[in-house]
Length: 566
Image 1 (cartoon, one colour):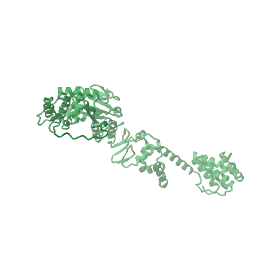
Image 2: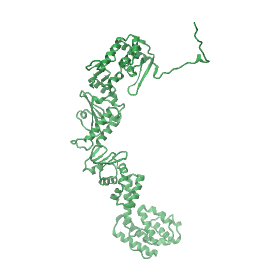
Image 3: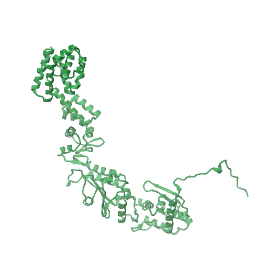
Image 4: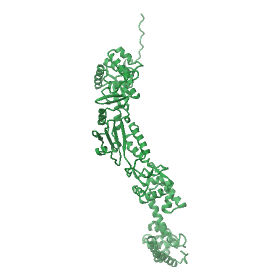
């Protein structure tokens, strides 16, 4: 008889340890081993321990999926101590998938070795340890071996749920209701008690931010709240504040205790809110209510976060209103434009600018919070922001020229220059309109001076420039002009500084001739400035005559000659 071939060895083989890692498998802790041993022993004693209470009429196995599964589970139960049979059944491709997973779990119970376990990880149902045997679904084996876990045991019935069967699980119960989603009373009570958002009350429940009277009588509040009604008549109210910052999402905390997790089949939900100012006897727009139903359904389907629900619900209603004025959560009818403008936060100039724009609109308008604007067929004005500045930033591009014309009587090139400058820098509109109003007011007052710019001969023209500059920007702004003047204008500059008592440190800047001449011109220049100040502040005809008299006096003293007609 031929001997076995010699083994080939290499240096270091005796000291080398081979480590094989299998993904999803780990050494079980003592606590996990004890838990698995206890549960698997219970499963071996009663293989039907993981089944729900049947609260429905079953048909024949050929036509009823649940009846067929129960029949095959009965076969596995009868063979639960036959290892060879279980080993074949747990890899059998045909037949009930739940029976396949049950056979693998029962074989694991017979083997008794619980030191190595597989780990089930699911982003929705979390993680749990189990012993994997055969090619049954991991989720089924997890649910069977964790039959005491009220959420995980639902995973066994995922295929049935896809076929329209309904299961409800809670800590003290597990029921199958057939093809009808009929939530047991015990399940409703238990899920509300264990939900991620805490409730007060019993038949009628409410969260922080609400009270029993509000929920019982369907009372509206400014923020809005969600009313949910279960099949058995239990009502619960969730305030906007608890939905905005929940510690855990609310819908999954309920939906994951039923299979399939569709709470929209067992709950009616209604958003209890109307815009501030909306008449109580006027129904909300149909289009908005339809959109509202879509949003609530998306929330119940776990595709919309709790924190977004209140905002989306309010927006669906506000954006369906087709008349009046809408801003924030407020509505004003078409005759309450002034009240609407007073609600906006901003200066009176900003509100007037918005008023001008509204008066010149040919259709409705919607200004979103992100700055985008839309023309509407309906005669409604919707401002998602309640502050004037961002609204004007959004509207300035299209309506800025209208504001300049209507508020300041500015047109053509001058208006175009101001319009483009504001369009580029987007200065705060309160300051922009205030400064523009002040500058134009000053310009109009300066236009009251008898002679126009550059109409007078030198050095009177320089005196006129100094007066206009002082009236526009203040006396301090003229000091540099006076210092830098030459010739006869230097003498006028000295006289100007003398009139305003600013010569103390500037004498060295002027030659003696300029100082001498300027000193002679001071009385007439002082009279001229006094008259100019009164024209700019009081706008009286007598001050204009005094200005002309003073200018003629200054012309005479300075030897300028005859003045042009003012």
